[in-house]
Length: 316
Image (cartoon, rainbow, N blue to C red; front, side, top):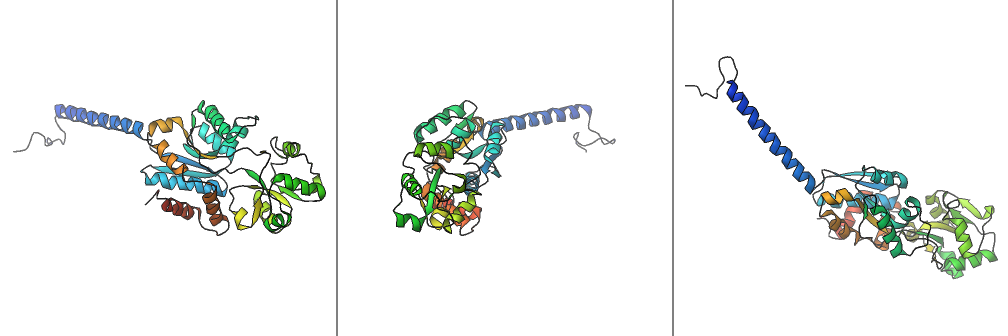
């Protein structure tokens, strides 16, 4: 005897059975949608991590992607971006997590010209960006600010440790050559206000404008007397450059900090604590070492990031 649940000779179920089946399907679909909605509140489907287009940012973004993936997050990495493009990505909800510098947000994005110390800078950008749903977590102790540097051998022989001592040397030898990237000479927070603070003036023949990477090579080869560098760049140590103390405090703080959109933090309750743990491991010294491994030893970014995470016990 055939079951009443078997098909009729015409290959169709009785009408009341079709209704019952559709009812059960709707119930199952409804439960599935409910489950998806609940899980969506608990954790976002994918975290999109952004990064800028220089070595340190490539390392930080890659490191964050590997770290969060080990925590069970689904991640997508989009790095190699310009600063403004990355910021636009955060504001338009296309990026979820980035590493940003306090000085960049203060000066470039929020147009604050007031002179602030590192703690004040962090609190100000945290407040201003918080108003548009961009949350600053705990800053690392990595401060990748600008600095003047000299070839190490020349600085040691002349006994120069500070920018003020460099300027004294320049006034005694006004034919000295200084190298800057293309932006610094014309920026409102660049060369001109620095000249005012340190009481000196460079003529056109004193200035060489070049790609930031070439500044390090020119210093290494002693083709220039001083140049603008980044304090956490691995080439400072690798090329034996003397990074001079900014004794009048001209350059603002650029503390590297994980920054996340508020709705992403709301959807991922553990994310803030996890990123704060990572930030606490990063400082000037280990970042210089990682930058040097990429820029001088030519190791891959992913490998350098993985080695650091493993060394610090952040991944297995």
